[in-house]
Image (cartoon, rainbow, N blue to C red):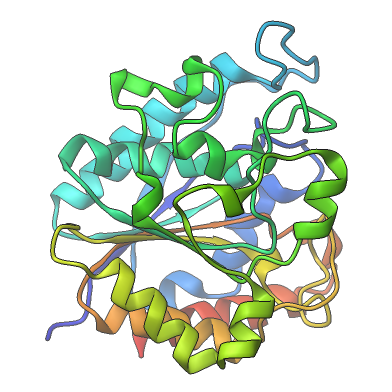
Amino acid sequence: MARPRYAIVEAPSVLGLFPKGVERLPEALLGAGLADRLGARRAGRVEPPPYDPRRDPPTGLLNPAGIAAYSTALADAVGLVCGAGEVPVVLGGDCSILLGCLLPLRRRGRFGLLFLDGHADFYQPEAEPNGEAASMDLALATGRGPAVITDLEGLRPLVRDEDVVAFGIRDGEEAANFGSQRIEDSGIELLDLAAIRQAGFDAALERALDWLTRPELFGVWVHLDADVLDDAVMPAVDYRMPGGLSFDELATVLAAVAASGRLAGIDITIFNPALDPDGTIAAAFSDAIARGLRS
């Protein structure tokens, strides 16, 4: 099987979070050599509209109209890469860019989502303390929330519950304390960090891939939030939690998806270069991603 041809799309939006460093993720990972390691084409940059720090009263969200417009623009850019037969590597930004990554796939048909994140990101607006869509992106992608960003182009949901595997989540107690709706009550296949450790990493990964490579799915999109990694090796995130996956485990996950021949694309979010002044974490993160996608 031929290796995928990768193309990098820069998506430095923080419309779903705050402008305190995450917007510099593309420069940091590209500076660490990610494009060269992947042999990837640079396919452009999608600039977000201006950030508004005010919470929108009707929706309870930050920047809902901006996120909707940005999602469409990003979807067009990602769609061009897919149409050229390449695999997009989308460098965020915050987790709200997931919507613009899934929209071009939804235009084409039915795809799966491997959601690699330390948080479930399943809040409803009234429970999210700051109105940040980056804490709601999986809920929004599966059709839960204000129509302005859940029913993009009339295609709600962007991904069905039963076509999602949430892998590595470890914020269940915190989410419950804030009153988040429960991912456990959805149809999403949940392999949280505790379940992965109980089953064994290899068995959990095999289960995830078996679920996402079903014949009715055209392919698999991977959402990679840096905070799925162990806080001991990835402290450069704004909402830290103990525990997580190792860099080697991340590389193994990405390698397995790439080897399946079903990888539709990947977005990478939340790493904050402002918290990595000497660039060592960016280098290690880029290395794990490249080892996985090119193995």
